[in-house]
Length: 65
Image 1: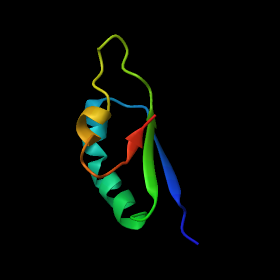
Image 2 (image 1 turned 90 degrees about the vertical axis):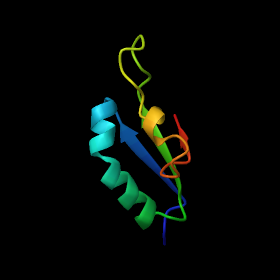
Image 3 (image 1 turned 135 degrees about the vertical axis):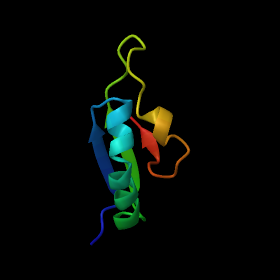
């Protein structure tokens, strides 16, 4: 039985998100039928760029929390 939803936890900066892009592509391949959502921390006073800036509209995740 395949999961219907996958929650991906990322608490990292822009560079960390870029380095882990291959993992996001693998998650999309393995869980292609599942809803994939990214759980991450909100940027602190604009210091950090959120992962959503890279992943939004990429098709790798369906939404952010």
